Amino acid sequence: MATEARAKFQNPDYRPDFHPENTLTPSSTHDGLHFWQLMIAGSVAGCIEHMAMFPVDTVKTHMQAITSCPIKAVSLRQAVRSILQTEGPSALYRGIGAMGLGAGPAHAVYFSVYETCKKRFSQGNPNNSVAHAASGVCATIASDAVFTPMDMVKQRLQLSKSAYKGVFDCVKRVLSEEGFGAFYASYRTTVLMNAPFTAVHFATYEAAKRGLNEVSPESADDERLIVHATAGAAAGGLAAAVTTPLDVVKTQLQCQGVCGCDRFKNGSIGGVIKTILKKDGYRGLMRGWVPRMLFHAPAAAICWSTYEAGKSFFQDYNEQKDSGTVT
Image 1 (cartoon, rainbow, N blue to C red):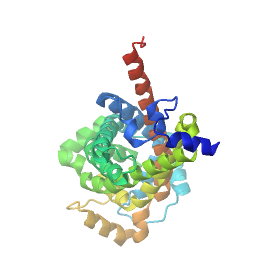
Image 2: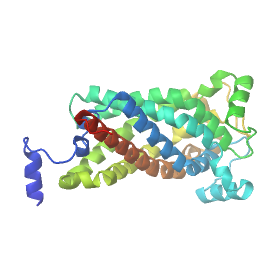
Image 3: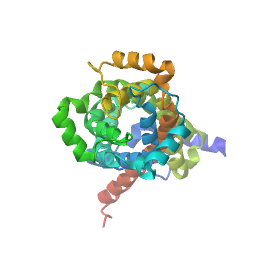
Image 4: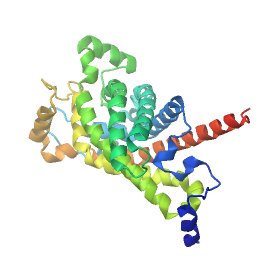
């Protein structure tokens, strides 16, 4: 059976009876889709991903927000218990409105730029990991410009005893008290974090997806959801672990001056790292790595499987439209 399957897929004249996008090769997934369709698929995937995993993100923010007080080691269990006992379950979802406003547009930009760059950089080579990584970097630079302001608002609202009443109150007060630049105080750090994160993420995802598909090519159509979810989880978890120190720095910059968090004079990455090392040592740079991995592994699985499902939907829609069968 396996020999027969290999013979079929090695034959250039063989054409399976399922849609081209289901072969899961990077060179084919972009074909036939319009830019706006990629944006919609990405937007839906991003919203579902972040909304579903938002409580875990709140716990991570609490663990990473080092204050002016002496630092005490806080485990994942202690952080969750503290939030639930002092503020109740609803505190896990505080700031989700800001996430909703930012995640949709940011992921629309993220995936559409990625697909466009991937098609151009790979030049028809589905195994070009460098092209996938470079495309991911381009995508994150563009999407972070959209998402960073709302991410800052979201993190400030997530903190315990936050002084802000809601999204618009936070935006209004930050503008009047700190100026527009406060929304982008962490942009440089965010890009420096997300560039390697995305490079590792996309390169791992494409490689894992290709490897999983080659294990059972004859059932690629039936198992594509599992393949996308598994590859996405592996990519998200690995990328999250590698970039945790920069995520801690980003949280410090976005939450500075709020709820007892330190305020930094120049906002340089080096200055923030020195402060963290002085207060909490090297372990301070890995604060929140467990919830960060617990967030990104399933979040990436949700995001990629939703995104690829959206692309499949538009592929079918385009084919039906071209054949005149759309009702």
